[in-house]
Length: 525
Image 1 (tube, one colour):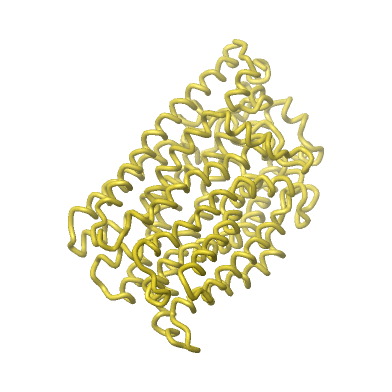
Image 2 (tube, rainbow, N blue to C red):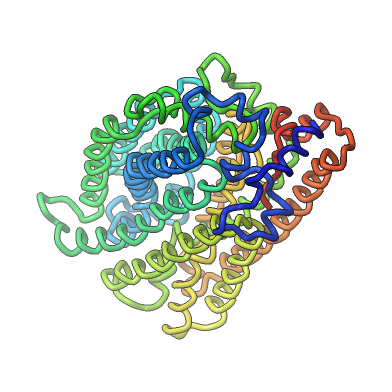
């Protein structure tokens, strides 16, 4: 192993690419650029024949072409699907302003209950769904099918005549919607290297923020134009229109999104081999090969036993808990004292600003190869926004706080999501279980958070903002602990560079893929 890593260091291509931060890159990540891998004879000899015979120039040209091809095929549809996923899950907040509570004669905490009940099924189904997706290996069928079902359920919510009917629809909707987001995170990690994943995860999550902007605009249009049409209230039309749109898009998704690199039909054989190999060399182990290698329980056990997974969960939980403010964003913005239509329109700019913020932060994280500061600095801004929100009732400073609040919460969150795949890369079953488990448990806050926003707490919602502030602090604390832990593991792996023996089995038990240890793997921090 020492010989292998020694060869890695002496190869001619160990200088990282120009767009990486050289100091942090050299210290903390030895295996990112394809040319580095090609300098290691052991790795190159394992490459598929078509890849092994490529010159560096041809390899670079083909990989750039392949990456663009994957981006164009995957990203537009998965982002659109996530916009609709988030829209169907959170349109109940806009429906509240459009007369939902009045028509269904809801009172007390019944609205809050109808919001939180969705997340019971949403939490319970995420891990089983991701493990099933990993086992089947057919995201092109699984994800669009789930989308059709949740679109039908969302549209059927318009037929609710009582609080009980609304509660039933929301409960079932949570089970079906649970499949998409963790499934999509796992799906992207099966196509992109660690260096590429933050930016793509940010593009995916920008869908949720765009849906927040679109939700307000769509709700304003429907409330103003369709209220009373065909004898139906505006909130019923809201569910009907958005549910029908979801089903319509899902039918196209069946023919657009591919499966995994080895099993897709729209790549040439050369492109398939390169797509699979670049994931192998990025980590030091092969990724998804076939369903026989994937087991439900094994991946879950590996994830549960890994302390890094629990530190990632704590970091993610802080972001998710602070981000629950977006579920009630129309209610919070209503505290600015404007009418319903104006309130819905005012919700759009904070989400658009947030989209720009998360994409910028993710782009810089990918460019520099740095993760920690891109995770812990945005919550500092979020803390400032929560303080402003509870210390004044003036329109200008409160709306400014809301405009920076969304982006500050989610900029660090999307980098953390990609960090899960960076830190727990192999085997695929473990990565699938970790992505789903962390996403599910971090959303436990969605069950109790609606009760932090009772109407009589407005307009400042001091209790809710205080909880959000403390949760942002939690992300900073546990993100810092995780960074120190990863640096410690990297130092242990550095022993091989000095010719010292390390216990591969022991390192495996601490969450590092065994083969990757011998091939220069380092954690991104």
